[in-house]
Image (cartoon, rainbow, N blue to C red):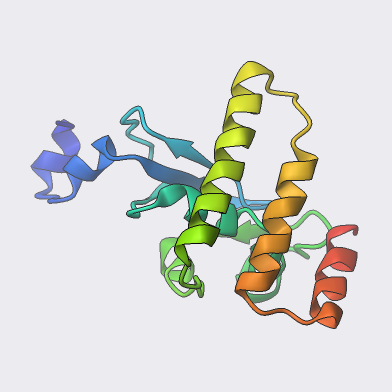
Length: 158
């Protein structure tokens, strides 16, 4: 038990022991990772606890959400030209997360597991093919049109 959390009467300290997504508050792009080791991050990091955190992580790291973050979240400077986006908890709470059908949830979890395993073996491993497959699944989840997909793909190249 972390003393500072107990001292201020926080009733969520047990959640740090759960599998969770940890993400930073401000950066050029959304950075997040999956933690199952019980890390206690510092004050510039946030945690997300979810029943199925891996499919949620896939959505949050997708091209679709990158586009949303850069268009809807406050930033320091132009987020398309090196500006820093603010991923504050109050903003993250507004992100529309679609319901997952069991098959989609399984596919996303499998892809995230493949990426995590590859990166564990070699941090420089090329996981682009799996990331693109995640993007395709996410496009379907959000029911995006071909024109909307094209806009996101072109924006991501900038």
